[in-house]
Length: 311
Image (cartoon, rainbow, N blue to C red; front, side):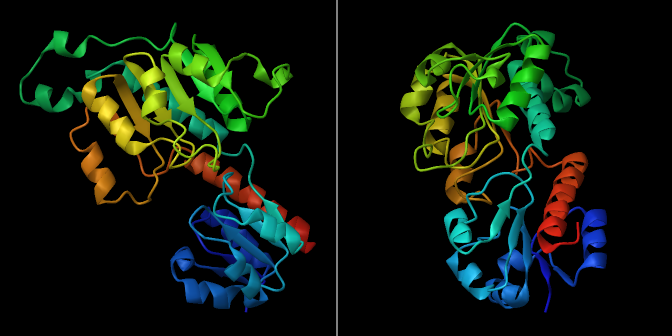
């Protein structure tokens, strides 16, 4: 059996290097074959996962030699961190490695959505249309106010880049001290204040019991008419039915959703979002680029080497 088990996609070159150093099982679909996963981890000292592998008590019980869980990303909601800690297993997320990719996703989708229908013109134009008034009613990003919910490592990169592009940045974080230096260039505010004042609201908080349905119908009603909502954090933080209703009513000017309560999205979500205008849906890839995938993999591999004594 293997010392290292990689159960999901990992940047090829980095995974190959790791496999050259350790007896490695590298199977990107293993996360979805539970019995095989349990068998493969029996002798494993390291488990490398993204967000689909459920690292719970069942997996940990099957892996008595496990020393480290290296997360190819930052969210830990698929890993029972307390159970790992109780067993002396180190959990190592790749903090900050995908922050630039997420920030660029946020600002790109914000610019697209603020321009209204501008980027929907291709089909009409190749058919001979040239309706400038229809597509020329959007807004600039510069001068708008960005509200960042969750001002950790990713939220701070989003805020810095938004500020550099001429946005005013306000932010809410449930745990960060109001006098922390990391707030710059954002201005810390309460959640209700942020919702009522931001032209663009971007979520960067973890999925916790306290953040499930954080952006529900009540929260959306507090947002400015025509505001943009972007969720590149975790599914379940935005109530999808409330978001779809606000898009269809026109209260929300647009939304970009990269994460969902159920992934892949189910028929319920498909039905909710069908017919919504000014909506961008992406399959949980805001933080996934060739650049970030390499950085994330390198951090995960370094953590495996360090813990297993080969770094």
